[in-house]
Image 1 (cartoon, rainbow, N blue to C red):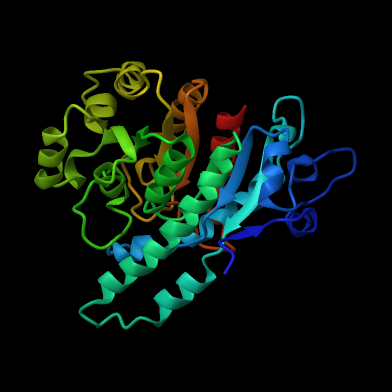
Image 2 (cartoon, rainbow, N blue to C red):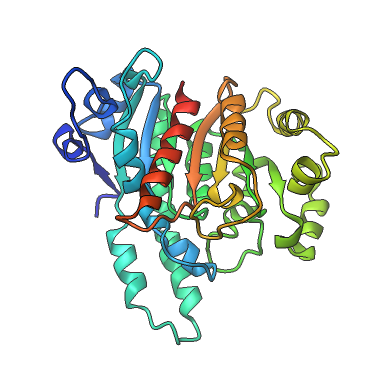
Length: 335
């Protein structure tokens, strides 16, 4: 099966609420007919969705991250097209085809002792699709903007980017969790572990780790890899305030961005009160997150943006709010 569903202009029309005298973002956004057209597109950025939650399930989490992509499209395609939003600078490619994997996960017996390992096999299939498509985007000289899905998709994104650039990359991860768990079956908690061990991830910085939700084993592993892996703590930045937000940004930048391509990861679990796979009552604000994205978007070495773990309920007000939030983040990055 084709790993990618390419969106046509006709496909996206259903999302757009047209209004006389205005041009909506979706009316001006670019599309292509096939992947080979990427190289000739004038757009710098390529929007890609990964509507899946198998990786979250495989990490003993709660379903729902597959819903973020549609929420994002409903909001993003209806913002205004104007001199500030610049829709001609982004191409809406489509989504990773996860239909088979989602159906396979639904048919598994949750009582089977190998349930989570079987989910991990399915996640590995999604990994292959993601890395294949991301490699083609980056090889065309474009910057992927990826909407997940679980944080398991960090692995395929890092691998695909590394393959395209023919060298390892660095990553800055805005996250409450390190996602540096052991190399067991694939899931949303070990994408960076796999990318690191397999040589696709060079330097890794976690921005805003929470003290309460990372095991001592994780901290031990981070410390043992301190020449290539580092972090700062949410509590140090937002609670004790022993370092300012600006200082924390520069700390992450100095560790990872030394004339080297880097990926930018934003886990919605780290943003306060946002519907996600692990919603938190204590986290960074939306505006702090926007500031983080804007800061690193200005760097010419940024290779991609991955927004993941949002888990809105379709047809609700929270779906609208999550969609708007993702649209803000995307615009902060491409603008």
